[in-house]
Image (cartoon, rainbow, N blue to C red):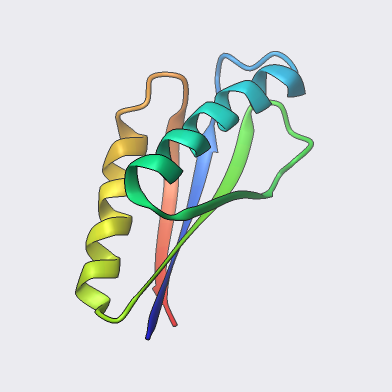
Length: 93
């Protein structure tokens, strides 16, 4: 069993309040969950308006498959127009 963990550091330049930040993040999290069958949660910087850290997790019996799924999530988030992907990290357990 392989657990793939992806941490996404995001900037949300258009957010002028926590409410607008949450609207952007909710939309992105819902689409990532549905499109890639992964778990997604905001894991840090909860009180900052224009910055967020998302954790994305998948589980598989094949490390290559888990890596492929999480890499597709990174590609998808990079194409989002409401936010900017500043950095990301991948790890496997």
